[in-house]
Image 1 (spheres, protein in one colour):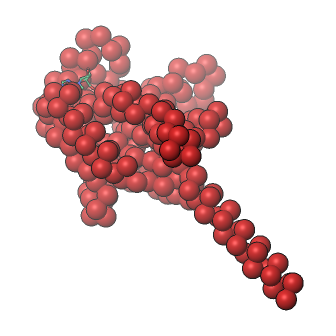
Image 2 (cartoon, protein in one colour):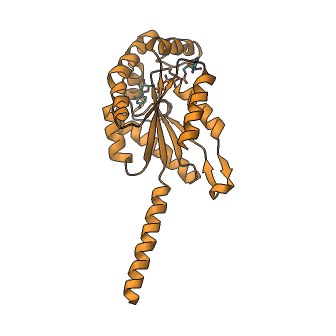
Image 3 (tube, helix red, strand yellow):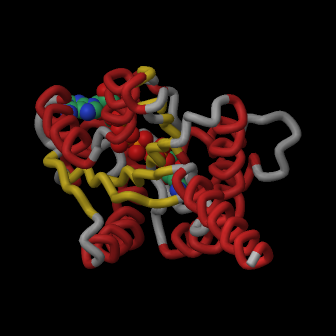
Length: 232
Ligand SMILES: Nc1ncnc2c1ncn2[C@@H]1O[C@H](COP(=O)(O)OP(=O)(O)OP(=O)(O)O)[C@@H](O)[C@H]1O
Ligand SMILES: Nc1ccn([C@@H]2O[C@H](COP(=O)(O)O)[C@@H](O)[C@H]2O)c(=O)n1
């Protein structure tokens, strides 16, 4: 009797531990769209708006998002002294090609782990510019699938011409090696050939929320906010 009671108790405890562990899994929103669609701009507005407010009614659960841009992480690695991948990343970025996922996924995993080590409550992530192709998706599945829950894809949709105009305008001051006509043509091709099919794949799973990104920053954000408030 005592043995049965102990067994039931330990099963109960382990199921609670399992549920808590699951509940603490990082929650991820993938943010996708063409080059210059406004992914970074909108992510910054999400972070600014939702911040890290302590909601006491929610057991002090932190409500907010951490923005991780795959492109920014790659640019950071490119300029890190002693990086063995610096040159490779540099040439892939100039050519608008997608860097092998083994590099990108490690940067993302490390950034997520470091964020959560500093503050366990920072467990909601906006992962911007990833997954960009089948290789990216394969890397996510093999390294991160059981470590994080992908809630949905936030897709900023606008025409190629709008994307190109915004990047060329940004190129006047960004200092980015890929905000020029030659790189942009390649980036748009990569987007159409490699990234759109990934968005399509998530669409077929009913996991894509599309926002018309051709409007003003505030109009786009109004839709984003409605969506995030609804999706919780
Ligand atoms: N809705 C908008 N209307 C007009 N300009 C915008 C809008 N959103 C962003 N921009 C401007 O367009 C440029 C590209 O925006 P942003 O960097 O957010 O795009 P992105 O999708 O993150 O680009 P990339 O993938 O190339 O890094 C920036 O100069 C930004 O200020
Ligand atoms: N998953 C990714 C994301 C980006 N890149 C490379 O970085 C370039 C710039 O990315 P942005 O998101 O800042 O526009 C992109 O064109 C790729 O060369 C990548 O390889 N993989």
